[in-house]
Length: 387
Ligand SMILES: [Zn+2]
Image (tube, rainbow, N blue to C red; front, side, top):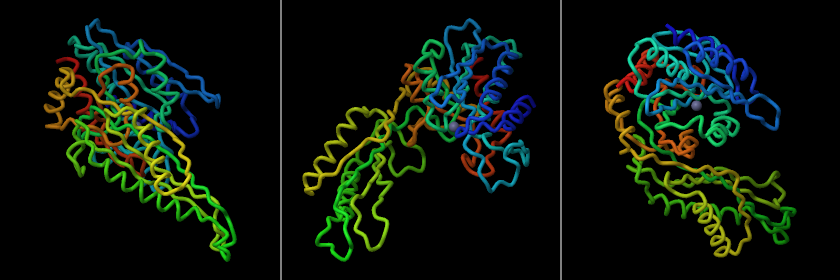
């Protein structure tokens, strides 16, 4: 099977996003493959400060159609890790499943996309869409020199009527995701000998009250809902605001009162919520808390990421859903609670959805993808294109 042979070669290359080893080889392998399929291909090598290669493959099959479908995948992987029952860098087929690091995230998506292009070329039926394919690097580390760069600097190259990001699951069709703001609050005190607490100013007690206030505010904004449905298993029907304290650090020794306490939090926005407004909001909240408690804590935004929302009533989204129903059965159109790369394609003005590639144990030992899901995803792309 074409897809399995290609997947075997991709899995053998350890494209660890932390070290960037084999990035060049892998991008070259994919580029060779797309060229063999008659796709016009280029490698966008993004300059990065660490001087390590960041090749992103961009391939295009122009069939002279009016509309264009952009398929989005990535070839980098998380570190192999331990606890595997098979060799993670050697594709193993067992009981209808393929095992190996990256098969579900996201090398399986690459072979599904290329398998589909191959079938479309062979069938002789005219595709309703020109097909563009991105195989990006660095997805697992944020995509700054991967998809984000490609979407920002090569907007024309990726221009399409629909972006299908094949990097989630088969449970739902995703049409948006939450934005996220991560922040850090530092509370200063006065470090001192624990035998003389009256001469110290313990920042831990202050930090605890701040955590309590953040928690109260988090409870309040939990009741704010997006217009987008949340995925199955969620406690609310619509995507909602989430605010969680994730780090609490202070002190080193039992007999020393520390001079500083640190709180970090993670704020998940509604897909339609503006990043700038959410930042303003969080700054004001911390200011209020400071005032109320008579504390002078300092807030720093560590990272920020906007969410997105694609109109589910867009005819092309509905058309895609029709074929998903045919092949996979009825799936709900929902928003994703975590972040997905559709954010970058959506920011480039492309309606963006997420579906596939299937599989399980992402970022864990024994990562796998079912062979039947590879076949079905390929079929989905082919049918969607051929109509
Ligand atoms: Zn991924």
